[in-house]
Length: 396
Ligand SMILES: Nc1nc2c(ncn2[C@@H]2O[C@H](COP(=O)(O)OP(=O)(O)O)[C@@H](O)[C@H]2O)c(=O)[nH]1
Ligand SMILES: [Mg+2]
Image 1 (tube, protein in one colour):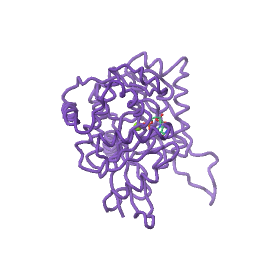
Image 2 (spheres, helix red, strand yellow; image 1 turned 90 degrees about the vertical axis):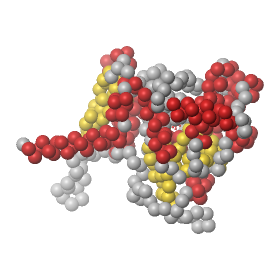
Image 3 (tube, helix red, strand yellow; image 1 turned 45 degrees about the vertical axis):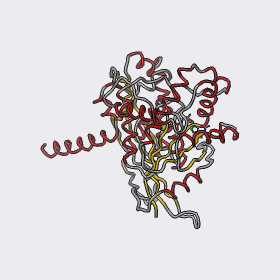
């Protein structure tokens, strides 16, 4: 059989998490129309059955990553670190490009901005590399304002020149990252359900000139278009090897943290402006239902089991807290209701969800706080707490 790690890379909002979920067939990563939804790398595991004459059986470990953008805050730098960590163990990289955004970029660029063409890349590349290398030391890297998707083709021409250049320079930042890689890189054009077919070919043509991709595969995660070909090409490129994860495990994230993510997704849906970006969720209590022991053989519980969860929503300012809570607590209630439905469907139990909001001024700039949010760190701390509890218990 074949097996390997496939890192999913791309700019914010390229459709990385949507593609991951579509490939896994489960909601592993939260998705939103807002950039920077994903903050940690997340593995999703796909078992591929052998196809006679096509390919052998495989286990593909996809690793979704935060969108690559020039970091501003400490949180941004931590997110970029997650990208690097995903790149440390990888057999193959998928670079996702939102086909709709590229089309506009091409259109916007045509009259006045020149995209770096093949051959003249080196200068840009070394610039991007220098920037990349200085990222951790230099907190002052400018973060361009995110330019939302402009749907109307004519609107692309009205985008101010400075921002068009930013698009190109942010793309260049991503290209700088992949140029250092020594593994196969596939270009995956996403959201092709949104662009006319005749737009795709010139786009593919331009991108082929910019980077020597091993494959170029257009997909629509939403319509499940192109996914079979993508999986087949990936299996072809993976090395022979054994499974990294047990056959029935589809993600590396513990449920407790998927729950925290679902609450954050609800915040992304329910709030606007800077609130989603300034919010973080920490699970404080997580009580799984007691195992049901039937008295009579075949007896079923009268009501579905209940999971009790308490979570803190952190934000940076009193004003954001007021928005998150809303008039008479209405907003917090909506956030909770939306999240609870999703959590119930994830866990398959009823859920009692308690939320409260805490102001932690400027937490995105606090290295300690940002580190404490990482679920891998939280897991270590939880394990530590359990040992301490046991220890205390023994002493009593
Ligand atoms: N129409 C369409 N929209 C998509 C597709 N894939 C992702 N999206 C949308 O693009 C936005 C960003 O998706 P997300 O997966 O969170 O992007 P990420 O930041 O790269 O992980 C969301 O609103 C998705 O619903 C697709 O194949 N077709
Ligand atoms: Mg994402």
